[in-house]
Image (tube, rainbow, N blue to C red; front, side, top):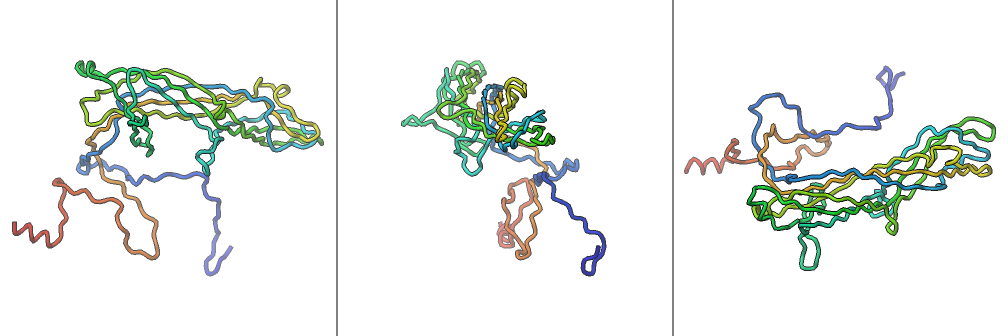
Length: 316
């Protein structure tokens, strides 16, 4: 095949569906002279607890789409998949599957304003997801240990899951076909949520020996698994012989992982091989571009000065 003045095969292919991420950090060549110390102001995890919880929701006669047509008969279930529903166009969509933890403490209290509003701090997620905690830690401070606090957590699960079922069926001509049946299934509503309860103990550092009060944070993630209610096609799947509409009874398991942490702000000195450097996409117009971050200037690195400042230094 030829194109203009060029000849040879043209290899066209679809782009990859997946991608590789770029951090901007190159590989370390092993030269220890390139390692420097850098101070960072971060949040340290003082204590943490991890919990795995599960809940069951049964669904009877759930309608799936598409309809399989007149005279269809399902003869085998090939695969069943479940994933949580999320609407990126509306983060407050009531169908979004979310876990809302509600925690109360015993032996400590959340710091509040005069109006009873909890005082929050910005967490590493970029949201005000951390609450300041206070209790009298004097006794355990004298022993050089942390103070235990206790809590009760109620997790309210609301929203929907997407169920996909691959089936092998025969149509009214006894021809075998494969179809994927889909349903958006509610597992909890604001009025009738799934409720999970657990208890925990955390260790609190001193509230006196620091410039900042410790913070409490918690976060959860949900996965789901699904199966036929009794694992029987004959009992759990009903196909309307006239319309081909499929109704299925299901057993949905919601698998929840939650973590609770006590956070304290700290400063760390870390060893660094340098700052990330990304290769920018080229522009046909601009020849230079501004920097996104300033250069570090301190006594341990060569100073970059103008001719004016150099003359002032020579006079001194």
